Amino acid sequence: MSAESSISLGEITQGQKLEGTVSKVTLSGAIVDVGAPVMGLLHISDLGEKTVTRTSDVLSEGQSITTWVKRVDLTGGRLSLTMVQPPQYTWNNLEPGMQVEGKVVRLERFGAFVDIGAQTDGLVHVSEMATGRVSKPSDVVSEGDQVSVWIKDVDKKSRRISLTLLEPPEVDIRALRPDMAFTGKVVRIESFGAFVDIGAGRDGMIHVTEMGRGYVGSPSEIVSVGDEVQVRVLEVDARRGRISLSMKDLPTDEYMIDEEEEELPTAMELALRSAMGEEGIEFSVKQQGRRRKKKGRRRYDPMRDEIISRTLATHQD
Image (cartoon, rainbow, N blue to C red; front, side, top):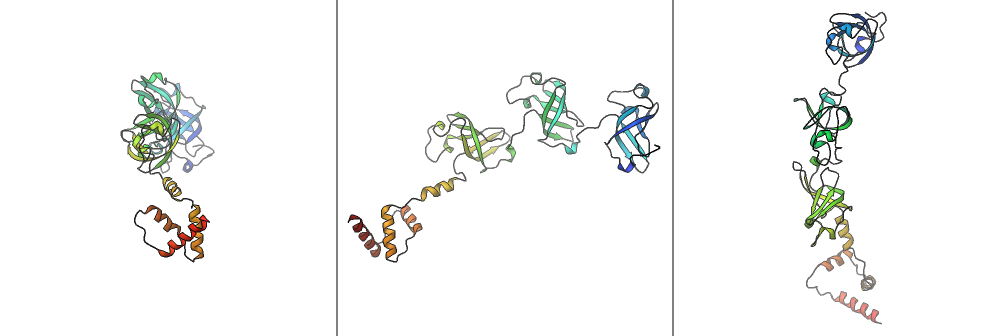
């Protein structure tokens, strides 16, 4: 037991980093003073990544070492240590979309294995190394390279971690729903439509029939490459990576239609309103709007016809 305890056993947690001094070297390992009420036991199998046959080949009494807590037994008063640094990430704190730093440890024809400090190395498939086609992993990375990767998928049961070198898109294609509106950039024009980048990793396609209410002969009549356009999601096929878009029936269309319908009154209408006001007859703008749209026979109104006749006569004078 340590003469002076700087930390209580109850304050020690699994995975905690502790500095210590080798108190005794044995055939099975070493006894280490880490400043706790009890000495820590360091087994020979926990002296490093490589296999050690004799503890004395690695440690000596009085040597200062860095250890991590492997297990702590409060009831039995036992403390097990290791010189192998525990993984930075556990299965519980690895999430898709998380960005981590790692080291390329092995290359295969289908991809590269990267040590990200988890309980197992992650795999970057060759298809996840660049936006274009990659013939072989060695064209992009080499063993020993430090890389930034994003977690694509975590399978705790199979102990597999899928990684990607491609930064995830701003918009998850799996979260797209019909009628969602976005501002996108036209990146390509074809005879049948235009492709728009809405930040989903896959460009969406606006068919020429979805570019306007009237007939559109060619997409280039409406948009050009580089244009920023308002679009609405029509349909999404996440499995095939297809996004169908439209430039029709956007949320802003309502306001545009309202503005088009609201016309300024003509000089005749202003004079008519004034004359009707003098006669004590209320003039309704809404009724006027309906009369404009309505096509049919007008009901005879003698008072109104009299006012219109007098108004015309006044303007002719």
